[in-house]
Length: 137
Image (cartoon, rainbow, N blue to C red):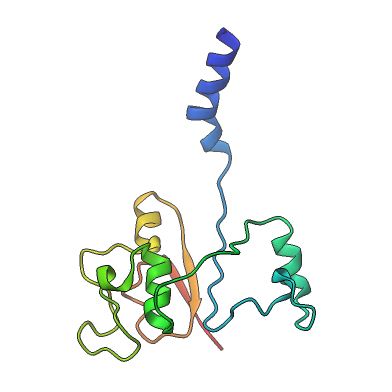
């Protein structure tokens, strides 16, 4: 019994100090299931296949709206667009920002001292809460 308690204490207190988990979230507008990862034989994606072989793959994930900005905000906040404030693609109400009280995945990770970065083609990167950004080319 003592061995089990020591093992559990090690897992809870010591183990997190030695290992950090990595999360790579790939979100591609209009990407769908066209890659080879999802069984499409036409689109050859060997690098994604190699990554997928040691990854978690979402095969039944969806958002409640077909437009890119609200879909992306649902993925990154965990809330549907009517709760996160991103109603449509061309909205002037919030200037492409969610409601102030809504926290994105990057903001939640930052509070837990987990580094996050993004490569995205978007002019207003300062509102997203990432530690660093890179220009899409």
